[in-house]
Amino acid sequence: MSSMSSVAGLSKYITTLPKIKFSIIGMVLISTLTGSLYFLIDSISHSILEEIFYGGIYFLMIIGITSIMSGALNQQIISILDGINVKIKHSMFLSALSMTILCIILLIGGVISRILNLDIFLNSLLFGCVLIYGFNTLVFWATSKMRFTKAVAVALIQPVLILAMYILITFLVTDTSFLGPIIIQITLKALIAGIIFVLAIYAFITIIASPFKKNLGIGVLDLLSLFIAHMNEGSNSLEGLFENMSEAIDTVVTFVSFKTEKGIKALFISPSVHPGPLGDLGGSNMPTILANKFDHFTMVAHGPSTHDFNPIAVSEIDKIETVVKKGLEKVEYKPSASEFVRYNAQTANIGVQFFNEGMVILSTFAPEGSDDIEFGVGLTMMAQSRNKCSVKDSIIVDCHNSFAPESGEVLPGNAEVFYLIDVIDKIKTDQNKTSVKIGCWQSTMDTLNKQEGIGESGIKTMIIEVNNQRTAYVLFDSNNMEVGFRQEIMEAVNDLEIDEIEVMTTDTHTVNTISRGYNPVGITKRPEIIEYVKKSIKEAIKDLEEVEVGTGTEKIENLNTFGPKNSTELISTISSVVAVSKIIAPVLLITSLIIAFIWIFFGL
Image 1 (tube, rainbow, N blue to C red):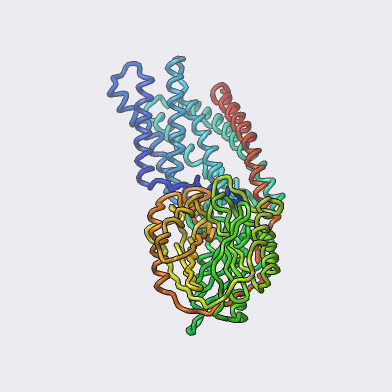
Image 2: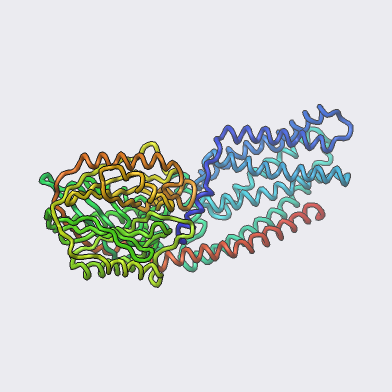
């Protein structure tokens, strides 16, 4: 599994929060039930029904109503302070979660009070408020792109409202002569404990942010908040952050063009540009965006490239379009193609077909698991096949159709590289070329979605008929394919009017934001997906007509990508920060909690 996609897997923790009404109802019920239970635990002389009623009302007023008010105020104030990501449902859910934490602490305090016969309600309330104050500070600072001082101020709202309501109710129902000392005690304890806890949070964030600033020149909280904005709202502001760490590269795009008397009928493109990193950021939806820039049927396959070659912005895809269209102007067409032939060496398998002065090599390691083929390996394959077969263009396609969790990239030095070299050496160059027919069909697969690993372009199928041999090129807009599903598809279409089939995926990373870092097609709904394949083949056969064919190879210059150095740096920085955080976070948190606890319960 590639490191970048492992990091993308963190997106699975971004979940859909409940609606506002559910958060409000939850706060009302939880606070009321907690109050009733607390008063029952602390019951001395009143009846059970009285304890349940008065306890429920008391906690609802002190904790429930104030938390609902906090949920509404937080969102408004953050919006005024130009913070991002916090909508009213987010604010209400955070208030509900914080209130629940406070309720748990109060119940624990109630049990201890009963056992030790001590009244520690106020201290438990203060300790809980300090805890949720620190929690809210961390959430607002880390996710809303606000300065630390602003986050500290906004985080005060909920605990201050709760303590103010407690003082108000105490003023109304008790002897007010005790109110002055209580206010002083609450203020001093809460102020010092809050400072202790917030300083621990500040120290933690400062420590983990340092490597990002030093190594990449970006702020870790900016990265996190903009990532959440993308997940929640589809914002592409994160691309602006990527620009600060981008690296311009030169790469290539290869293509096959099929033309009738009416003009280009179909285009098969293999760019050595990676469709990542995730969601709709950068080049993640490149296969669909690039295909839509052409007026004819266009398949954008996965060329040899890794996450190092992720475009940093959607606009970079325009550079690929430009060079392909310039290349098409130079293509010379002939009605000349060979039959589709398979070769293998060790675990490397390729399907080869010659088109005019070029050739297509469909590469897969199925049934073994595999991931991206690195660009340098792809260049080696191109140079070797052009030299071996005396062709002008070699269109290398990483079929990307056999994924397992332990799958790794094909990098220089891997044994798989030599398997690919060996299998290319087996290609026979005496292939007869004759006239060619193609038929095309595509479907967005409307009954399936990203949850099933299907991207915006769905499925595209091209049938190529040469010398009465029909070969189906089937391309899913997906990020890889479950191991074994390729073979299952191939067996399922044995009775159709085709002789060969290869199943490919575009490696789109738009499907990676739903349920897991990787979301290969074939995890679920295999029968339904197979039916789409069958239909696509049948419809493409109906579309068969004679064409002329030409190939091209074009260089893409100054494509702004993550780059080999920065991509590796990003992953290593994140990995090191996660490792260090596992040690530092518990130490700082536990230490600050202990100090705050001692100060609140034993200080004054």
